[in-house]
Each structure stands twice: as C-alpha cells, then as structure tokens.
Length: 263
Image 1: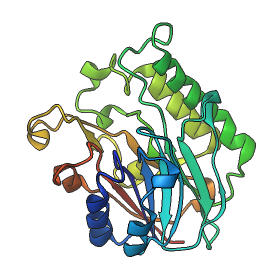
Image 2: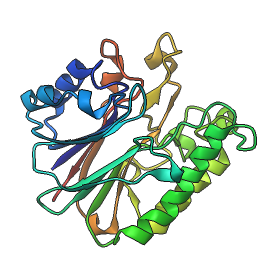
Image 3: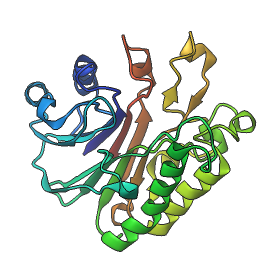
Image 4: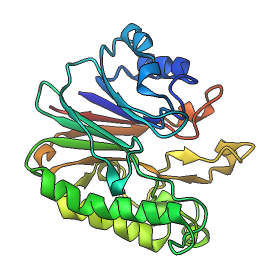
C-alpha cells in the first residue's frame, strides 16, 4: 500500500498539482497539510475524479488545515486539538486493513526562537511536548499506526543544509529537535525516512521560495516526516522524496514524501 504525505500549501490553488501527483505516484492514501480551506469549500468533487473517493478533512479559512484522502473506505474518524487550540492541525482515520493514519501539521513557530517573546514558538514547543504524552496515553503502540505530515522540525544535522548556520534558526534549534526526538521515543515511533535513507546522507523535503534557483542553491530542510508505530515493524518497503514536485509550475515549497508498506 502506498502512502503519500504533502504540505500542499492550498489544496484549491494546487488541485492540478495534486492531480499530477496522483497520476505520477498512484497512491492508496494521500495525507495533506496546509490545505487552507474551510470544510464546506473542500474540493471533494475533484478528488472523486482522481479516484480518491473517500476523504476526511478538517480546515479553517485561509490557513492550516489537514486531510486524509483515500481509495479505500475510512472508518473511526477523529483528531485532537493540540495545545488548547482548535486550529485544524490533526485528522485521523482507520483503513479497512486496520492501519490507522494520522495527518499532522505542527506549528511553524515564527521567526524568533524564544518562547518568552514569541507566542508562536511557545505554541510550537507546547504542541510537540503534548505529542510526547498524548500518543502513549491514547494509543496502543502495538496497533499499526502511520503518522505523517509537516512536523516543521529538521531533527538531524543532515536534515538541513548547514547544521552550524541553522542552530539558532526556528526548525533546527536544539530545544525543538530534542523535543521532537523525545516525542518519537516516548511512543516507539520509527522514522521511516531515515530507516531507508540513513544519516549522514542528505535528505530534504522543503526549499524556501526565497531562493531564485532552489535546486542549485539546495538550501533545504527535512520538515516533513513519516513515523511508524511498533505495530508496523517490518512492513516498510520503499521511501522517496519527489523532489521534482518542488519544480512544478507554481509549486508548494514542500515536496511530497512517498512510503510503501507491505500491509
């Protein structure tokens, strides 16, 4: 079964790119973040045409928003409101084979990595800290669970173009990377991407719009992740980042991540 996660940066604006993605990768399940649309305006009809006949989404106007799009029926829909805010950052559902999928969008955190002066950064740290406790308290790690999305943190040195230059930049500060690692370890999540592309090999999923030639500059970060619960141990068969999508016309600044599981 093929899973794709992508911060699409507006599903309505980039519906043609989603169509291209589906045609190129033939996914069973697509997990989206930053859909930027209220639920009543979600482009359900267009998804039907793509064969993604089952969908679950949670959105608000103009920003945030998450979705699970599937060729297969979705059961047990849900989602959590993190860090005390109802801001459309999490949606989950269960597939017919019993795999539970979570689409998650962690706050970016603003520009200043100081929670005392930057409420956005404080919110991000609180969100990640709650991830550490929520999953062990509410989910059985023996259950087959896939968590994927834009976690907005690049935890490893080889997840960024310059570890030294980004240590004080939001997304790669020690307090963020240590917090994300603690959340991962608390539930026993496996980092699917780094399982098949181990460090220190370079691995990025995001390139800033600010770079005139993003590919030549290659100042990327791995902000998007796929985590597997212990219940999915031994099922991982393939992982790739569709970097070419960053070069599509009017692209998202994130590239899709593709994972194949034997489930």
